[in-house]
Image (cartoon, rainbow over all chains, first blue to last red; front, side):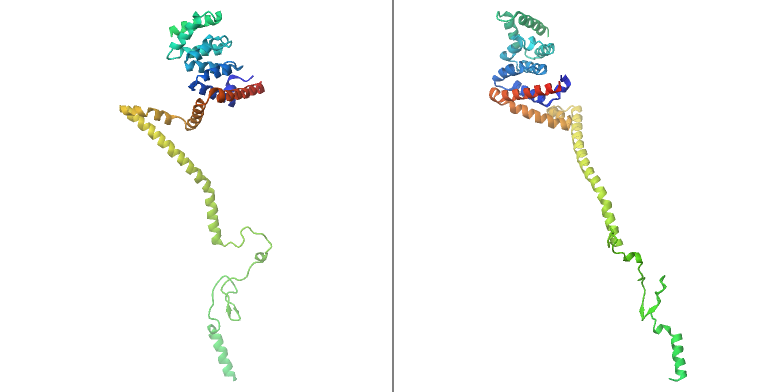
Length: 130
Length: 176
């Protein structure tokens, strides 16, 4: 298996990085759908990590909902590295209002899985402290 | 002719040799002073037998000593052309570095003096402080990202992302 240092120097990985970076700043709201559909479903941890960070950086209700309220994505990812990186990115946000709204919505809604709600509560507590 | 006349002529020839041999040149050539039918040889005309070997290939050909000196000077100068060329390039690089350094130093000094207006040039100083190679690389990447950021996500970006991800997965499978 290709290790982390090797993958970061890979030409195609750099290309994926550039595309994800462009979707982060793309004003078109369809960018979120592309990131969710392709990036968060990738089998490569590094790509999922990068996609989650990009969705947090967009700091929109739709993009934050993907990484907070979806099972197996963002803070609920099976990979600890991906989940922790997403939480770290959420804590690094200058304007946390939108993120808090999404977290409260996830915690209070009945339609979400209990595990997802539990993670949302933990992140909300961390964000309140930061 | 009487005997007295013959004696007179003989004495004339004995005591007046310069009448027939006017140019007597002293040289290392033993034949130089010889009279070959009244032609005075003042130069060494005897060539060595080695000089007549025409079949021997010579790199110098019929180059004269003077020409040889000129050619040797030219060939000698050729060796230094390469050095001068690189020295020229190095001097350009040094010049650019000096300009950059002096500009950054000037800005630093101005800021030290407390000139508030210099704050406007902070961005320029940061750019100049960067390594030149990274400057070009970052510029190219940023331009590419900015170009893609204005594209349509579903129609244009999505196929590109799928293609790049497939290539990356293939690379990872190869490395495994």
